[in-house]
Length: 257
Length: 268
Image (tube, rainbow over all chains, first blue to last red; front, side):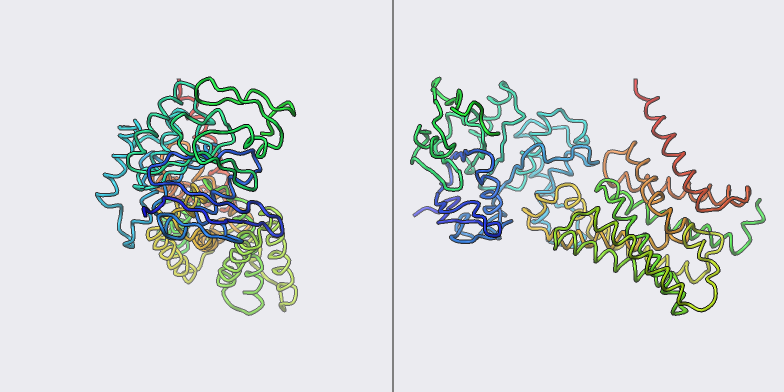
């Protein structure tokens, strides 16, 4: 049996007496490109924090390549939401990217190793930021800043890449580049995208789950009417222009984001 | 003018000013980028309780200030990080409680506290040699901690959530940052006084930030600006017979204003 990149087993997380997510069971293989969709407030952030070992579980267990989150998170490359960043912070692109090498930097008082710098260069090459290392992040364009955040995750040599709302700031042409990059990354790692935006789901995604307190899965990469009804709470019309699927309207007259 | 350099009190003032400016350039940079000026103000005003305690026990008021700034930093950290209390509320409370304790200690101390005013507004020309030793020790501790934990401090200041994902002990490193502020404030009290501390902590760093691209260069620039501000301020206050703390602060603000205006001139 191969080790799954991520295995969620009856996971539940509570804030006080409020149950944020429950009965979440799912598995992502080591070459999967998976997506978790769901409305805001449906528990996506909670599930992410649980996977990253930042929240205690009320029930169930999580394993990352067979390890509990506190150990397994060294194998995760985490790309947080873009808008949480303080891009005015005086830090250069390379300093920011090197932050993902901090756990590997065990020796006290020693600087980053040659290996750390090589990992940083590789990540910057891969994502098209070569030569921008000495620039402050404030000087980058929005798209470059977004890629710098992804490069930071990649420099940690992850085997599982998790992106939280990755396409919020990416315009249509950049989106194509973005998904071709993900396709390239899949050769060496599993990728999970978390988003409220169903239109952001690419055709390359081979596994989809919908989260609204509980996780609804369909086994493969199709979103069914039924799943969306369960997750978004009312019927949603789906029209497939090939892929990706697009949500045209819901019957409440606007998505609750 | 040259002959005053031979006077011991003036030499002490210059050494104290340089020690304080180095500490405030380094730690002040963290305060500016992490937006902790109000927290720093709370810690520095709480130091007044320590000054009062010093008078009451008959020990060096600056030792009392160290105890109180460290205590205030620990309380603020605990309430903010562990009890999830609002930063501005607890900062205001610690600020006022420290001042209140100071007044109570002083009122129950027999006799009159003669140099209270210099603890509130600073008088660098009155710094005794024993305080200089204390300031040098504090600066060594600050430098050692910042050098040893620099990358960790930057990671936690820049993006605490990601630092936690990286497995860094974020609450612990945040406590270190609070304690660094507490230790930095003590030398600053001699220079500009409890009330004016936050300005000297933030102005050189804010000026440096206008022209620098990374935290390391920001700190070095802030130290240089701080040293220049303090030295020119001491000289001006001596030659013009003005209060030293106030002169230094107004000079620091003028340099910041000038740097801000200068940046607009450089841009096309």
